[in-house]
Image (cartoon, rainbow, N blue to C red; front, side):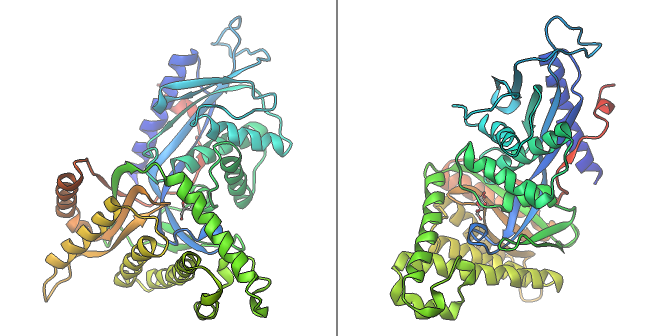
Length: 429
Ligand code: GLA
C-alpha cells in the first residue's frame, strides 16, 4: 500500500514539476487513472459478454492549470480569457496548442487524439470548456496492451468533470470515454478498459456484464497467496488495429449469418452473447468456418469467465489457472489474435510448471495467458510469490535467446480506480 502511494506520488511530482517548468506557475488540479490487465473474458466486451479485468498499479496522471496570459503575473494567478490551451505529453516529448473553448477537431498526432477526443465528447454533450494547460504522463507502458489509452481518456475525463463541475455516472463516463476513442483516435474498442479504469477497487477484479452494464467486485487472492506476473513482449505487431476491427466485423457478420439462417429461434439474435454452445451445433452448417470459430470462442470464453469468478470465490486458484490456459488456447486457435511471442511465453510457463512439479508439491504456477487485444503486448501469469524470481529469469533468458529481444517482467498489485488528485499543492514543498 505504502509502495503504491509512493509510486503515485512520484508520478504526480514528475507531472507537477514538468508543468511548472513549462508554464512558470503551479497546476491547480489533476487526476489519475490506472491501466489494467484482463484476468479473463477476452474479446467478449463488444460481443456483450462477460469480462473480468483488474486495475494495476500503473497510472496516467494529468495536471492542469489556468491559462495565464503573458501580461499577467503567474504568482497572482490572474488570468485573462485566453484563446488557446497547451497540452503537453511528457512521454512523447511533444505538445499541441488547441482552443478548448471552441469545437475541437481531430489532430494528426495520434497521442493528442486521446485528450482531444474526451474534450470533444464533453462538448458534444453540451459542456463548454475553458482553456486550461495540461501535462500528461504515464507509468502504464504505452502500446503494451495494458490500456494506457483508456487510462489517458479516463484521467482527462476526471479532470474535465472537475473543471465543468459535473459528476458523471461511472458507466456513462466509461461510455463517453469509449465514444471518444471511437471518434478521435478511431479505435473501435469495447467498454472493458474504461470501466475498470473508472470503477476499480483495490484488491478486487471487476466482473462486468457488457450487455446490461451491471458489474460486481470479485476479491482477488492476497499477495501472499498469489501474484500477477506481467511479461511484456515489447512487440506490437502492425496489424493489431486492423485485425481488431476485422474481428469485430467477423462477429457482426456471424450475427447476420445467424439471423439469416431462416431458423426461427435465431431471427432476432442481437449479439453473440445470446447464443449457446448447443445452438452453435445447430447453426454450424449455416455459417462460414471463420464465423464458427469466432462464435465458438465467444461462447466458451463467457462460460470460462463465469467459471473463473466462481473459482475465485471458492479460492480455487488451480481452476482459475486452468481457465487462463484454456482462454489462451482459444484466443490462439479460434479467435486467431495471438502471435509467436505470446504463445512462446505461455508455453514457457507451462514447461516451467511441469519441470518444477513433483509428486508432493505443486509448481506454484496456476495459469498463464495473453491479455488484452493481442498481436503483441503482455502475458499474465498467476503464481505464488515464491516462484517469481526463478520464473522471471527463466522467461527472460529463453525469450531473449529466441527473439533477440528484451522481455520486461514485473508483478502488479491490484489497484483502485481513477480519482482527482487531492491537495495538489501538497507536493510543492
Ligand atoms: C482492447 C479493447 C477492449 C477489449 C480487448 C479485448 O483492450 O480496448 O475493449 O475488446 O481489447 O478483450
